[in-house]
Length: 71
Image (cartoon, rainbow, N blue to C red; front, top):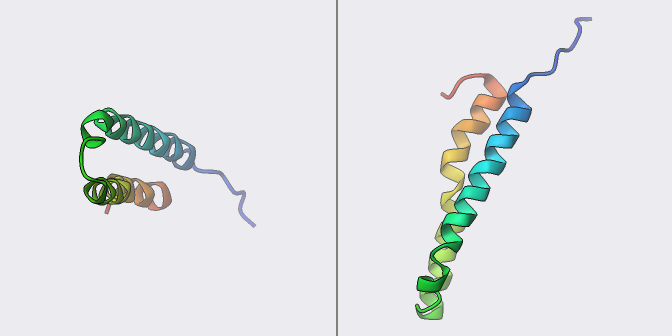
């Protein structure tokens, strides 16, 4: 049985994911004053879309963490 050597990509990737989520949340929150003036239905649509969109830059990062390449 071979010795298992943990990959450094997973902890680094997790830190990058946390950084992306934090920056995304700060960015969205910085618009809260403007968004707060919108009708409730439009705010709901915006926050649903904003809550999904952050996944797209994270997907290649997850692939890299698992496989060591971005594709």
